Amino acid sequence: MKKELVKGLPYRMTPYAIFDLDGTLIDSMPYWEKIDIDLLTARGVQFDPVATTEATKAMSIPEAIRYWQEHFGVRESVEELSAEVGRRICKAYAEDVPIKPHVYEYLDHLKEQGVRMCIATSSQLEQVEVVMRRLDLWDRFEFVLTAPQVGRGKDFPDIYLEAARRMGAKPEECTVFEDTLAAVQTAAKAGFHTVAVADVCGAAAAEQISAAAQCYVLDMGQLMERISDRPL
Image (cartoon, rainbow, N blue to C red):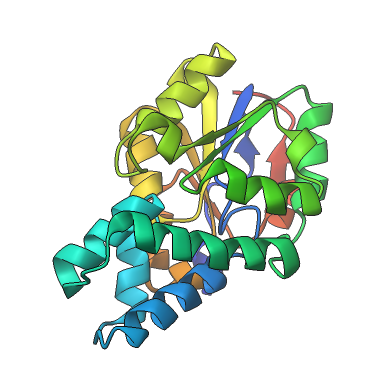
């Protein structure tokens, strides 16, 4: 990852924070990528794993499977494949997926500053609860909101707008923390402040993500080092 892509520091924090989970707080995107590769390869699909992951990682599981059906001719039902993806990711969440660097320190800092925090994730609630409880994240947030709950993935602003509404905030009072280009662009267009956190699975789009976000960091340790005590 090129260090010159880092920008927007020091960052002045807003009173409300909406965090993505996968790729932002937990290092789970390689597991999602492996699931995609395993399932599509088993069905004889020839595809570019990097491009496919980038195209689908802001989507909910059903949306990603519909993408597979449309672009790769996958024939199984959305329900059948969703269940298989769910089983595999739950196993990874329960056993292997680690926290990303400096997450605990940064979340504790925001809590000390009185910032209200929630999770907005594309994954299913019953899946993410497993990993959030294992990694001591569950009780650090006011609530967890999922794309299936709002009906659309992060190509649309619904999840961020609903998260802000539940906290009693306006978009301009919230910072959205994300790792994907589509999600950063969606949040920014809806009027939210945006901080992008680098992720290995987003390396191919790093320059675009850095350009789209107000602040781009390699990890949350850089936010700890360069955060401004003056709120927006």
